[in-house]
Length: 160
Image (cartoon, rainbow, N blue to C red; front, side, top):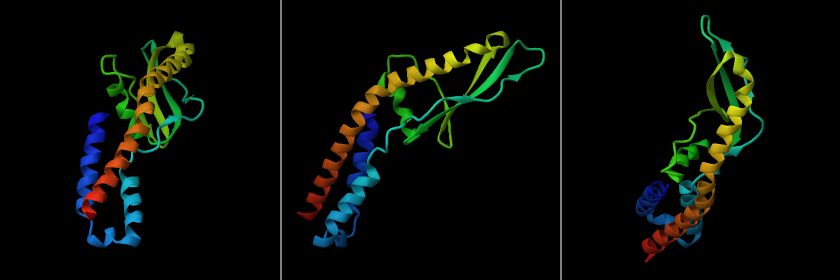
């Protein structure tokens, strides 16, 4: 996550260097500063937004397993889920999900006679994701504050 923040800060500073002089005039400076800051901030943190739903189990002929696709609604920007593993690098990787139209989507393969365990598997994955994301939730607002300070500094340096 720190690496992503540093990359954003470098991009922000380069962006400010490339702005036309008109952006630094008295009436335009505040608007330009706010626009640049907003475009480089980490987005709204993702969070779970309701109960998980799932499709009917898909059975395979000749197999004692079934596949159940689960949809977990989430709001915020799901791209921040990519920072989960980096928040706890010495732990096993978090569960992997696809992101589709505001849902985290995962297919679970379970034994036919154990289909009732699907809710427990989903709940376990959600708890694991939440534990990984606790650190990300803590640091994102701090990184956004630092990006804002970097933008202010870049604008001040450009004006001086």
